Image 1 (cartoon, rainbow over the protein chains, first blue to last red):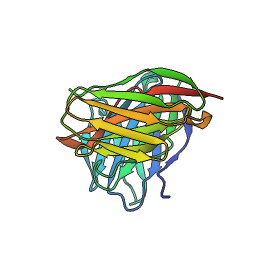
Image 2: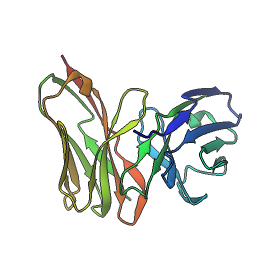
Image 3: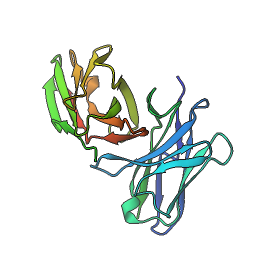
Image 4: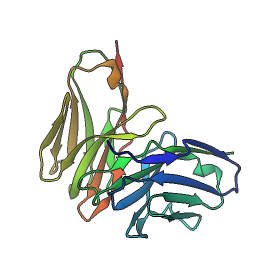
Length: 114
Length: 113
């Protein structure tokens, strides 16, 4: 069964450093997403991406965050200057068309900011 | 603003029991509802997807029902097994915006042998 692949599975970074989280969505999917889950809290929507541009972003997704689809297969989330409160599990997902057929999620990247 | 609530927060049952997990949402104008499973420190596995026009979906020992007008969904697990131990999450997408999911906090299930 097709999978969404995320790398790395765990990343530790110093506060103030830039991090890039990587995802390879399912090849025939058109919509891509990033969600995050802070330990003990609800999963939160960050951003959706379609047709090479952001289609929606949440209040969390401020100027410190950016997304890119650099080469037609990868989908990346960059955090420019990490803060302690960015520590969370970050999930990438992709879908054929919105949520109608559901999402497929990756296994997540646990980001720890120290 | 849509809010999703799941009760109970945690559940511990002996193996073999049938059990029901509950999900409620405040705005009935949903596009669809999904149930996910999350193992500790792991990703999100989709279990069942119910469109707003549907009443239930079944997959193996799992059955999910949807009562949109009352803002409720239940996930029924038959003959529970230790391997069912995980956190079960409910998420809705809204009729006016079907591109993002709004999540509950989950029910942490422990099935004891």
